[in-house]
Amino acid sequence: MALGNRYKSAPGAGTLAALILVLVFGSPWYADWVSDNTNPNTAGGWWLRLLAWPRWSFNSNDSLREIIVGDLRAILLIVLTALFLFLLPGSQLARARGTISQFFAGWASYIFAGGFAALFTTLFLHNPSLIGAFQAAGSGATYGLFVGWLVGLATLGGYRGTR
Image 1 (cartoon, rainbow, N blue to C red):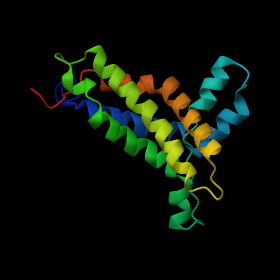
Image 2 (image 1 turned 180 degrees about the vertical axis):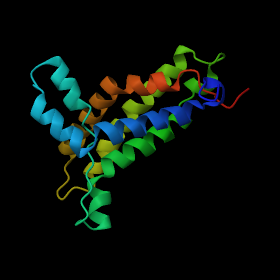
Image 3 (image 1 turned 45 degrees about the horizontal axis):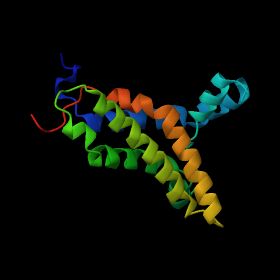
C-alpha cells in the first residue's frame, strides 16, 4: 500500500524517473559498456547508445567547476524535466488520475528538457556557434522523443494537486 499510486505526485514521479535514467544510463560504466558491446548500425544498438546521451563523469582530480560544467547537460536535463512537469498543464487538467494526458505531459516534458538542456549546454562550450546549438538541441530532442516515454509512464496515475 505504501508503494501504490495514492500518494505519488506526477511531477515527482517523472523527475525521479529522469534522475534514474540519467544516473544509470548516463554513467561512465554504462557508456563504456554500450560502446564496447553494441552495434550502432542496428536499431537495438542505436537505442542503447542513445540512452547514454546525458553522459556524466566524476573524476576526483577535477575541480568543482570542471565537474559542474562537464556534467551540466545531465544536471539540466533533470532540473528542466521537473520544471516542465510542473509547467505543462496536461497533468493538472486531466479529470481522472492515470489519463493519457499525464503520459503525454511527462513525455513532452522530457523532450523539451532534452532539447533545452543541450541548447543551454552549448553556451558553456569553448567556441559555441549557432549551428552547433541547433544540432545539439536536435540531438537532445531526439533523445527525449525516444526515451521520454519512460518518464511518461512514470507520471501515470500520479496526484496532480487538485483533489
